[in-house]
Length: 92
Length: 92
Image (cartoon, rainbow over all chains, first blue to last red; front, side, top):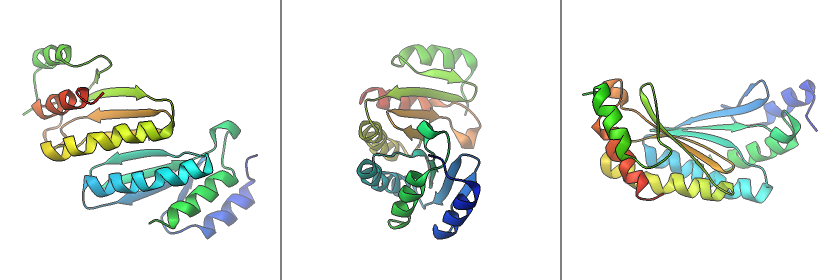
């Protein structure tokens, strides 16, 4: 079930710095000093996603990893997205 | 130094199935049965990129990893892109 606007805005305040809401997505753009560190961040997200049965889209390049969260099945942002975002915050 | 059109088309024939040329990029869209396998493919590309000092952009999601190659410094496709593409073919 997708969250209402008020809930989304409230939950955004609970997330770490850098998370942005763009339409149906939560987006985090992290930067790194090289490719390996960007990939390591992506790799560290993998067990969190597996644990939660909810998976991000990741865009990785030299010195950057962008995390995009949405709940495709529900067509927008749900509790699942914020739960995964909080787990990701703990490994940043 | 970017490659001429004739050279690009010729080199494309030498790559494995699935590689497409889109403008200034070589693109490979691989699919997998889950998120972990898609991430493992991305992870396996990392040492190849490090060895060559040339890095792809990767888009990873549940069951998919898209590889995008270009030589940003030269503004298009170069030998570096095809060399990395061939190395990636060897781990597919």
